[in-house]
Length: 353
Ligand code: GLU
Image 1 (spheres, rainbow, N blue to C red):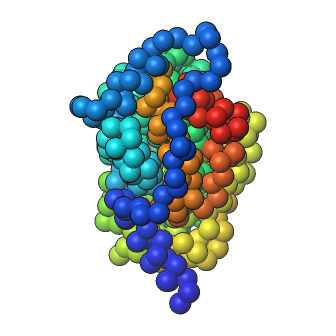
Image 2 (image 1 turned 180 degrees about the vertical axis):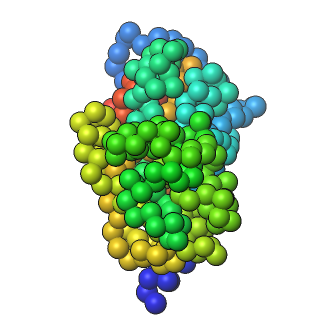
């Protein structure tokens, strides 16, 4: 009983992406400008007057993921914190549903989005010109703001498929993720570490939301989804017509040797009472979600967003069940791109850096 109440509360919080927070922390008494350094360029301060002056608001968009993922309400939580101070900053933040990490990084670099949520491994790869960025080389404009919740590479399979181990995927119809997603490379890395190649499975490359429908209707045997927990998407599929289970990803230790950004991770199945393996702990591996921006985004905008999230940390954290383990110091870890000047300004003021 207690579990189902908790679950209902978790889902309610997950779906309430437009929660209007009544209790947010006080802002510091005065705006502070860049401390100390006489070598700072003038651009940020010029931009500051643009942001703070009355008149046309500055619109910023945060790229997220599919609407049933955790990125979408996470973007909503960040936007809420900034929008609560619209009188002060004159910034209007909105969120956009997207194909995920890789899409977001590319859109931020191109200037189509001002912020994006991206897996830490994808941030690392973009900065070093690896994976999707191998041909284009290191993405020098990419900037880190902070890290967010942990995400686990989640392998969901129909209970009737007999898939109980990642190696059982051989010959099966498996969604490895859409090309713009974070999970696309994670699935390939997991298969390789388990001794399987892409040719060993019938690979499908659709978004998580479509994979859920396909698995439920029987046109898919399994799918990979790198996501935080609890997740509305996983809750939906575990409550669907077809019984499903989360399959452990074990015996893949080469992953941790080959890729510095992967860490062992587990899923608390108490979140998903409808799953065939409900109540257990499922072992896998994972990464952190992070917020990224571009060096082209003015310092005061990134400063305002960072400060509002950190000053109102407890209210921010309460917006998402997946944020349960967040700490301020933890949010400064796992970043491989240089930290944006605006975020750095706040971290220095707050004594976090
Ligand atoms: N990790 C996924 C991606 O990068 C998104 C997960 C989510 O939307 O919560 O594509």
